Amino acid sequence: MRWTAPPPAPRKAQTVPRKIIIDTDPGIDDALAIYYALAAPELELVGVTTIFGNCEAPLSTTNALRLLEIAGRSDIPVAEGAHAPLVVPFGGAADFVHGADGQGDVNLPPPKTAKHPLSAAQFIIEMVNRSPDPITLVPIGPLTNIALALALDPTLERKLGGIVLMGGNAFALGNITPTAEANIHADPEAAERVFRTHVPIVMVGLDLTDRALMTGDKIDQLATFDNPRAQHLARIIPFYRKFHQQWYEADGILIHDSMTIAYLLHPHLFRTRNYQIVVELHGVNRGRTTPALERGINREAWAGRPNVTVCLDADISALIDLELQYHAKP
Ligand code: BDR
Ligand code: CA
Image (cartoon, rainbow, N blue to C red):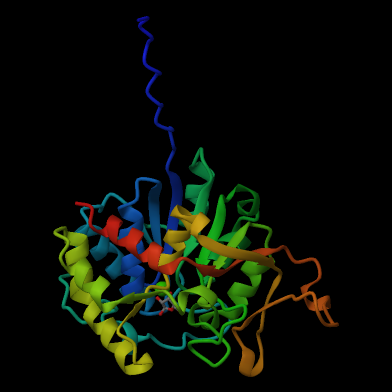
């Protein structure tokens, strides 16, 4: 019998991790998203920028520093961003959702590390201009810092690797008003500027995330993972879970912000469609992200706008199981 050499072992695809900056107001679902990204070798978190929203901006910064410290990743810089929206005063923290400390009122010690000296917008500009590879922005709070960065350095528009944001609602109802989602509603003028740019944008909004329920049994599973990130999540989630019980009569938590990371890692599990988006700035619909539809007249409002990739649906239960696998990593 002739000996034949075995076929060469398939070479592992050399994937360069995708560089991301998370812009955040942590926030309990923000903490889940940050820890999800940290556990993903497919992603390289090159910085965290903070924003008002669930918390006042300085508390967002403190929480981002604490979250990275707990994860043993204080090497990742944290730059503080805007304290208020572009044109109106800050509407106030969401302490009834995330706790007065933004982290489920668990009394965390102050962080040992300090914030970066640059503002969030300047930090984003600096990082994007310095990086040999494109950086993708992942805003999971109001879009003020992103609008400021794009205004301060218009070259970002062609240099960014994209924006994958949590916010908006093309067809779903709102969660902060009957028609608007909280992150967009917190600074509609900023969102409107961002949606007008030609950076490729993926909108992971309430069309999807209002169904992204991590159920009680999955939360219990997360609590069994023996690593500091999961243990912190297990401490802070009960506050957020109680809010969901009282507000939605749901057994579980909506993991809005995690869905941006899920999209970056598993886009094939999402159903998306392109729409031009206008952000409503006035009246009862302030903060609503209205898509241009083929039907109807009066489409001038959307004329010349780039398309946004809007997430409409996903295999949510598969995504949540996958996310748990990342949280389980040591
Ligand atoms: C968004 O609002 C915040 O409370 C959450 O952190 C999330 O970013 C959901 O509408
Ligand atoms: Ca958030």
